[in-house]
Amino acid sequence: MPRTITMTPDVASAPRAPQTAVAARRMAQIVDAAARIVDERGAERLTTAAIANATGLAIGSIYRYFPDRVAILVELGRRSRERLHDRLLAATSMGQPTFEQAIDAFVDTVAQHYRAEPSVRSIGLGDRIDLGADREHVAWTEVASPVVDALVRDHGVPAALAVVAIDTAAPMVDALVELAFRDHPTGEPTFLQHARLVARGCIRRVVG
Image (tube, rainbow, N blue to C red; front, side):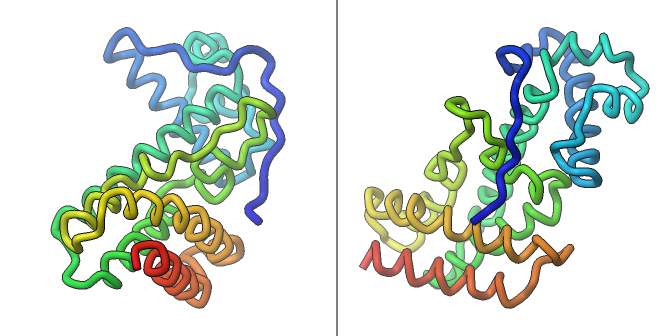
């Protein structure tokens, strides 16, 4: 099972919506620094002081945009889900000639996301931060909606079955990819191949 990190928010942990382009850039700067710190030291060691040191910002400036460090992690998870969605959209836009290749492209894109995003091996898509009742849950049929659309568009899978197939297979794919990257910086090939085979079998069973 993927590891979780228990965090206790000091206050309601929601980032403040940026009102200007300057604020949006500043928030992105803070989240980028947090991603590097999480990758290097782990989410448990993320502090506003560390972010201030990495960005050159005053701690008070960080609190203008995020009420606490948990809010930064929540935003990091949200951004990770958004970026994975965009990667899946790019990967499926050209279509795959066979059903198996379409599923493999899904798994390989999740693996690419693990390589490209500094924080994902620690906090996943935000779902590995234990916030109690407020813990994030990945809505895979939204994050991986381009894969659902590709199965329908390119391979004639009924939409309702495609949704069930991805909702069933995606958590298993994510768990196996997480294992592949746990002790291997580019992903242990055996685990990645197992993720492809599991995804193929699971999706095939659902769609028939």
